[in-house]
Image 1 (cartoon, rainbow, N blue to C red):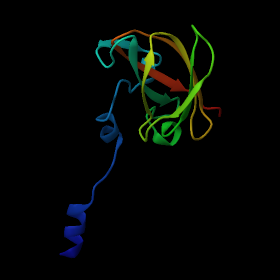
Image 2 (image 1 turned 60 degrees about the horizontal axis):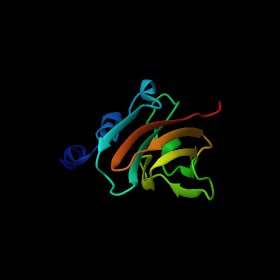
Image 3 (image 1 turned 90 degrees about the vertical axis):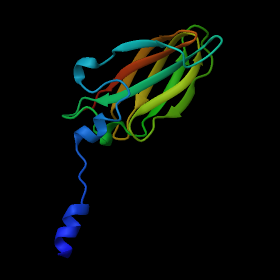
Amino acid sequence: MLFLISLACKSTINEEDFDRLDVFCDTPEEAYAEEYIAGGASGNSGKLQAQLMSDADYPRDLTYIEKSTYILENLDVGGGESRGQADAIGTIETIRGEGNWSMRIEGPTGCLGDVSFEIQAGQTLNICVPLICEE
């Protein structure tokens, strides 16, 4: 009886569980895909919402994307870079001034990504950013 109860309480985690948490991308074909949505920031600022993925068998494998470190740089004005960290499912969210930006990313296992994008005032940019892992 106790064995049956333990089986009933057992939960499994599979790819579909992570897909429900999707911010923007799931498949390699969506690499570098961008989508602007009205709202998310006010004034001359816009919101960046990036979802990291890897070139692994399962692109959303947390081994390669969780808590990745990123560096943002404004390409229009130059100056200082800002550093941050993705969350536990490889999502980056930040509010930035409008203009052209670049972002370099390093995953927890050394996978690397690099992307340039434009922040538009009053808009949220959803972007899918691939990390390339050396074999």
